[in-house]
Amino acid sequence: MHNSVTVPSKLPHVGTTIFTVIGQLAAKHQAINLSQGAPNFPCSADLVRYAHEAMQAGHNQYAPMSGLPLLREAIAAKVETLYGQRYDVDDEVTVMASASEALFSSIAALVHPGDEVIVFEPAFDSYIPMIELQGATPVVIKLAAPEFTIPWDEVAARITPRTRMILLNTPHNPTGTVLSDTDIARLEALTEGSNIIILSDEVYEHVVFDGALHHSMSRHPKLAARSVVVTSFGKTFHVTGWRVGYCLAPRVLMDEIRKVHQFAMFAADTPMQYALARLMAEPAHYLGLSDFYQHKRDLLSRALADSPLKLIPSQGSFFMLASFGHLTDESDSDFVQRLIVEHGVATIPVSAFYRDGTDQQVIRLSFAKDDVTLLAGAERLCRIGG
Ligand code: GLN
Image (cartoon, rainbow, N blue to C red):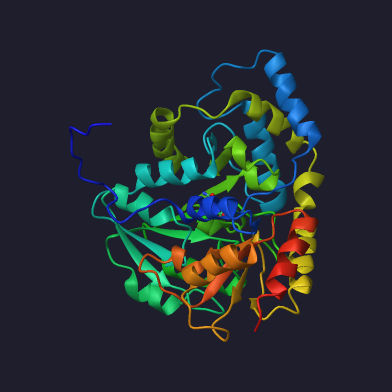
């Protein structure tokens, strides 16, 4: 079409997300896709039936802005049982049109132009653009391979009077690390007496391995009192396409978040909320999720034991990392491209999670795939030659 306007970009450094780029390349080369953190297996048939029944029962108009009371009650009850914190169902729990919307609405509501937001890289690719769109400054702290632990002394040194927020993600995408007791103690000490808000992306809350504890901010009263906890039904119930998540926050924060949510989305999908509320009554679906994904992590790790890749252990999430610097001088992007084109396996280059493209020659593999796909992908990776 003929172009008659010009527009200054609000995100001049941003291109198409890596997940779309790799997804398209994988499709073109019919590669086995271990890239996106989305299941290739079905969700519960009951869940689909519940959504269908909700539609047939006529639940097809707007849900309440803050979410169906039935679903908010189920969320509050789950959080109290698992993490011990009681959130007020009316004022402190909001159903969102995806965890992404929850993050976006929270940042838009709470972060002002000129504020600083501490964010750790590698970071999920939406975080920094969301901060920049508010005219705020991302204060980026790098986590280094292979441990990717938070350098708390550096965090302490980079807190200023303008620090409005610390953005955390546990279990972590892409590294598969989880916060420990020590991390929580450092975070409590650093934020005590400050006005810093913690925005905690916990979409993989039910995917923590080897019996480790998920350190939700809602488990720690001092942190909960200054935190927005964001999570996702998509990751928990294998329905990433439904775009339903939620957030929890003390009322003083939630009042502001809802002001944005009501104008950005107004409400999340109604029939999906009815269906999710019914599935929440069956806790086995989320209580069994760690074992379900640990099996997949172990299956993929074992199948890759004979590959030349060096695996970095995963403590949670849908992901594991693998380093390849001992094999070649290629950049991680070139290596990923070659794996797709020559070997028919798609993964994600970890440099995509660094704003400056830091390349540690590490790739991310998603094991949120059926076992046949995991084994077939591993078999190809074993043949890449050392
Ligand atoms: N969270 C998923 C991942 O990291 C999907 C991201 C996306 O496709 N936008 O793979």
